[in-house]
Every structure is written in C-alpha cells, then in structure tokens.
Amino acid sequence: MLQKINKKVICVIAAFFTVLAISTANQIITDEAAHSVIDTNDAIIMPIVKLGLNYEKAYGVNSAILLLLLAYFYFQVSQKKENREDKRLTRITLVGGFIFAFFMVFGNSFFHINSWDLIFYGKFQMLISAINMIGYVCLFQNILTFLLLKLKDETEKPQKESKEKVNKTKFFNRHPILRYTLYFLIAWLPYLIIFYPGTMNMDSLFEIEQYLGEIGWTTHHPILPTILFGTFMKIGSFYLGNDNLGIFCNTIFQVCLGAILLSYSIHECYQLTKSKKIKYALFVFFAFFPIWPIHFYTEVKDIYFSMAMLLYVIFSMKFIVTNGKINTKDWFVYWLAMIFVYLFRNNGIFIILFTFPFLAMAVKKVERIKIIATSILAIVFCMMATKIYIQANDIKKGSVAEALSIPFQQTARYVMEYDLTEEEENTIDKIIAIKDIKENYNPEIVDYVKGKYKQTTATKDDLKNYFILWFHMFLKHPAVYFEATMNSSYGYYFPNKTENKDSFAQFTIDIPEHINVNHFVIEFMPDTKDNRQAIERGLHTLRNMPGIGLLFSCGFYTWGLLVVTFILWYFKRKREMTVLVPLYVVVLVCTASPVNAFVRYMQPVMLVLPFVIAWMLYGVKKGR
Image 1 (cartoon, helix red, strand yellow):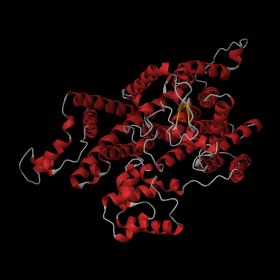
Image 2 (cartoon, one colour):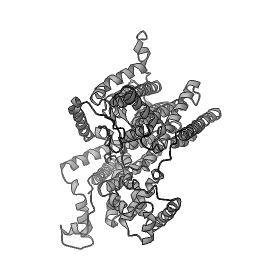
Image 3 (cartoon, helix red, strand yellow):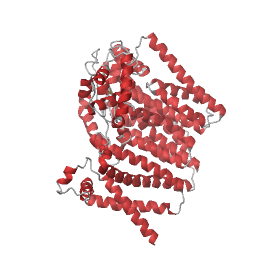
Image 4 (cartoon, helix red, strand yellow):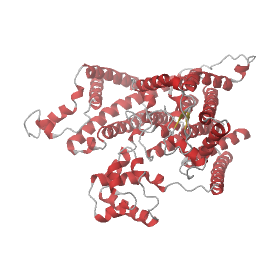
C-alpha cells in the first residue's frame, strides 16, 4: 500500500515538472523584471521571484487539468511496467526521452529568441533549463514506454492471418496496383482541375530557361530534372503552341507517376504486413491529405527526388526481406532507383554511399557482393553519364557557395556579434562584403548571405585565407559557430517550428520577370481563383489544428523517424533498421541546407516515413 502511495507521489511530482516545462517563459527573466515585482536584492528571494515569473503560464485551470491527466497517465504507465523487469526498456526510453527533451528545450530557445540564451544566460536560466529537461524527459520517456509496451502486448497476442477475399474474375481485383492508381487519380482530380496547369517553383523556370539556352546552364540544379522540365516545356510551348501545356505535360506526368508509385508501394507493404488497416491508412493519407496532390502537381525537382527515394527504400525492404535473393528484374529496377536518387538531387550520391555498406552487412557473402557491385555500378554510371552530358553541352560548374552554407552562416553570425579587426574585415570582404552580411543576415536562411558571394572575383587564395580566418575565429569564439548552425537548422528537429520560405506547399506559379527570358505566359484559369484561395486558407487553418497540424511539420517527421528507430532497437530488429539509413542521410543534409524548416528539402522523409512505419510493424511482427 505504502509503495503504491509513493509511486503516486512520484508520478505527481513528475507531472508537476512536465507542466512547468510546458509552461516555461519565452523570454529571459531579468533582475529588472523581478525588481518590478519586489524591491529587494536578497540572494534567496530574488531567484524565487524570478522562478515565479518564469512559470506564470502554469497558473490556471488548464494547467491544473493537465497536471492531473499527466499524473494519471504516468501512474498507468508505471503500473503497466510494474510486473516487467525490463532494464532494456528503461534504458532505451531514457535515451529517447533525453533526445526529445533536448530538441524541445533547445528548439524552444532558438524559436523564440534566435539563440540559446534561454538555456545558458546565467545560472538562473541554466536552472530553468534543468527543470524543463527533467519535465520533458519524464513526458517523452513515459510516452515511449507506453508505445513499446503496447506494441509488445500486441505481439504477444495470438496472431490471426488476414485473408482478403478477392474476386479473381474482375479485372481490377486481379490488378490491385492499377485499381489504386485509378482511385488516387479520382481523389486528386479536383486539385488537377482547380490548379490547372499545376503550380510551379521558381527554380523550375530557371532550369527551363537553362535548357533552352536563354540562361547559362550550370550544375547548380541537377541535370536530369532540367532536361525533363525543358523537354516538356518544348513540347507544350513550341509544338502544341500553349505555354500552359508545357507545364501541364510535366505536372500530369508527375501525378500519374506518383499515383502508380504510391499504389505499388502500398501493395508491397500489404504483401509484407497482410494488414488491411495499414493498406487503407496509407491510401487515405496520401489520397485525402491535401498537401500530397498539391506536391505531386507542383513542377519542382524535389518531388521527383522524393519518388526516387520511395522506390529505393521499397526495394531496400524487398532486399532485406529476401536476404538479398531478389530476381533479375527487381535487381534492374533497384539499380534504376539508385540512379534516379543520384540524378534527381546533387547530393543524392551520399544516400547511396552511406546506405549500401549497411545493406551489405545485413546479408550473406554472395548477396553482399551483389549489393556493393550494384551500388557502385549505379554511382559510376551516373558519374560517367553526367560528365559526358556536361561536356557535350558545355555546362559550367555551379557556384562553390552551395557547399559553403554552414561556414558562411557561421561567419555571418560572428560578424553580427563581434567586432572585427581591419585584417579580418579585408579577408572576409574578398568573399562577401561585410556591409552585405550586416544588411542581409537572417539567422534561419543562409541564402540571403550566400547570394552575395563574390563568385567572379574571389580567387582560390582568397578562399584559402578565408578558411584560415574562419578557423581562427572558431578558436576565439566557438560557441557562436554552434549557435549559428543550430539556429539555421533546429526546425528539422523541433516540431513547433512552422515552415520557412515557400510554405508547406506551392500554391502559386512562380515566374519572376528576371528569369522569364522567353516571356512564357503561364497562369491559372481565372474562374478557379476563389477555389484556389479557399483551399489555401483551409490548409492553413488545418495546419493550426491540434494534432493534425503536426503532419505539416518538418520536425515532426524527424521525431517519427526516431520513434521508429527506438521501436526497432527495442525489438532487436537491426536488419530492419538498415532501411532507415537513407532517411537519416536526408535529415543530415537538411541540417546542412541553406534554409531552416524548408518543407521541399524534407519532402522525401515526409513521403517515405508512412511506409517505413508499416515496415516497422512488419519487423516487430516478424520478431515475435
């Protein structure tokens, strides 16, 4: 009895810390703020007053209800754990709880004041951070424990084989992929009509003009999507005589390709899990969650890359399931998926390079040689084909600034926070003018500074001297470099951060005059304006709804990936964890990207994660 009372007290205390963490202030509580409440400098009273000011939002009925609900939840979880001596469960959930708590505490600081001062600004803020960390660790450890125990209970139940009655006499029942493709096209049809000829990103117009020879062609954008966009535009604009058709030819191709690929992927997941619930959930999410038809109807290279990623991951699943013994046709499609991953994004090579060693370790010797050879062959083929095409079409190298996003942002923050010597100013000025840095610096978007890089005048020696200076400045003030990097990437780990730049989907045809050299006339149908605006406003409203709004968040999908990892780790499904490697590579690339919380960059993870969740459930069931 006494033990049960003690457990309840512990749960209430844990819930109390969690409510404090959720209610923490979004600004630094200064001594001046405390003096406005009480005129004293007493060393004991002042921290107490500041503590009260920091947790002002904890007052009220809402917080009291939350405290009771959390205490009840924590107690139920502890009761569920009571008869299970599972140190592995405690260890894994504690690691997960700490990681998610870290993201919340640091993310909250950068989100509100663009620095980590809410954590490190004096001893008082460090105390607040420690309290908040404890509260969030309690919350996320209990949530992870609940999920893992729930899954474990499900695996211990007798499993019934799911038998789906299929009438083989009907054509569509014999061809489920074709059936679901048709369903997707019907579900997406309103968007295809309302947003005709499709939305368009500015980068795509730039690629079209490059392909048509109106703008100097560089490797800044991948070669393959540039060829696709340019070719479709040629067909529509020059052969069919309508600029809108130039866009529509590409967007309708994307839509059909996406519908087929999603249907195939859903079918493959159903073959693995034999779960109709999973099959229907995947279909409903992609058919009726409005951002997906808009994404697939947007002319931009990222959707092609995302589809290539999905194909690559699905075939990696098949590779793991069969222990590498896939047939010749599947090997060929797998190889094509690797090629498309490489060619549809300039950093796609890293996904293949970092993934195939893990795939090789998951199988035996002969299959290990096959996956290594196939991956290397895909990389070599792409490198040779790209090099030949670049030389044949006199395509120039893209700006080196693309690879310098992180150091440029670190330098920019250093310039904003510290005084420079004349020598330091001169060294940086040869790369980017100090004046341009101060006028254009944005802590979350590197493009504004990177765009001022003096590509035509900066020499190799200038870059060499800049990097020497960059390293010396790091030694002088290392903290500012970490702050700069975290401030420009925390949105990929902090779900509360809303999207940057182009919103969560492209709702416009972005054709600025300075890029539209051919003076293409690409526009929506005027009669659909009200419908387009209604959809956009509706989606923004949906984004702000509790729970469902997280489906628009970049950081939420990273959290989903981590949860899948912890579940597979707990159930000792190391081979199934191999499939997660490509998604982690994308997240790491996003961390080094020039824009924080940019949905286009995170789109591959957002597209593939639902299928990875199905894969996780298959792995857990198989581990049973």
